Amino acid sequence: MRLRFSAGLLGLLFLLTACETIPDRPRIAYTGDPVIDGRAELQAAQPKDRVLWNYRIAASALRRNQPDEARVQLDTAIPLIGGILANSADARKARGLFSGEDSKTFIGEPYERVMAYYYRAILYWMEGQPDNARACYRTGQLIDSDAEANAYKSDYILLDYLDGFVSTKLAADGEDALARAQKNARGGALPPYDPNANLIVFAEYGQGPRKYGGGEFGEQLRFITTQSRSTHARLTLGSQVILLPTFDDLNYQATTRGGRVMDYILGRKAVFKSTTNTIGDVALTGAAIAASNARHYNGGTNRDAANAAMVLGAIGLISKITSAATTPKADTRAWDNLPQRLSFAAAQVAPGDYPAKVEFFDKDGTLLHARTKSFSVTVKPDGDTVIFVSELSR
Image (tube, rainbow, N blue to C red; front, side, top):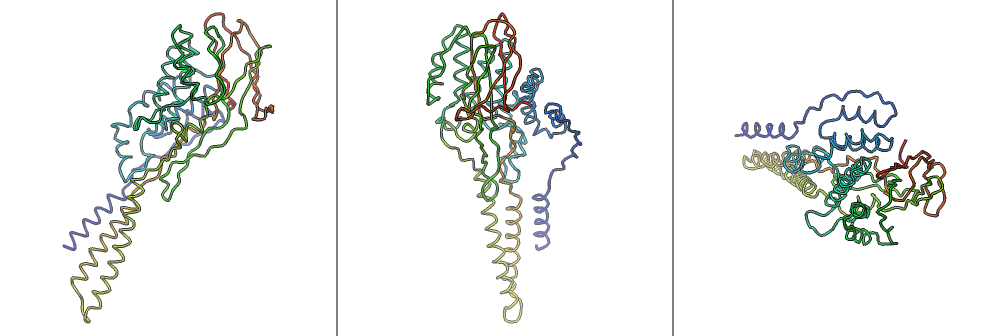
């Protein structure tokens, strides 16, 4: 019996402590170009991390005026956003007690998935497909809604505002979307729609949220949010000045759902780890007491106490091993080159070539000279001219 019990215990030890073999990671010769280096990281990444690199490369490419590259990366990532977590083997593994959340295929928190659609919408609009851009805005709002409780509705301002704006430009009714955007704006009036606007400007500034694990076991997904010094911007196009106020704040979106502060706790795993650890301590203490009693039984050995010591010791050891093998850590992989603030403007501009610059300002209206970006814009004679400006471009 003792031999069979020991063999079973060794088998459990092997099962709980076995780990996957991760292939050696290729060395990367970094160039300083975020797109080239991102592609190299993508090639070296494990399959579960590739969507993360698709995201990062897409943002960098859009900022470097490489729309084709951004399109390829987003079109690779977006099909995976819909349902990959529902039935995939790695998702089932991540939901188990003995695998970390970061073992699942990364698709991101809702704010990250929303941004994939937001950037794809910009590219669609650049390509002369505002109807597809509108579909992306609507999908983004669905992603941001609370699918489980259906109590905290999506609250991005720009997604609704742009949904309505595209509808207006396509001679449809955009008033309901504008009303939703205005309700979420909680402040001054949003700009009215101008269906004849032919210059479409997207701007972003500030560093977006970053993730870290909190709690006793790292089971709480928390965010580091830093307020960008830039709070608004201004585009000068020839002699025309176009204001670029903040519409949405990704720090807010990452840490709330419908205005409710979110509490990311992977509680089931954390409780299981704590409970099994405590059981192990109690059982091992009982085993020590039983073993002591067995040795001091009328100068001989108490077989019952000895057996109890062995059983309690085994229970304690199994519980401690189980606790150690439980991985409650939150998934802190992050789309770490997102902005904090999203901005938009639209204007009527005569076709032609223009010198342009975007200037960024702090909350007191002070110009942040070092962040000014100068470029040229060619406004097309037909259709919309879409430009994208990021404070994070390099």
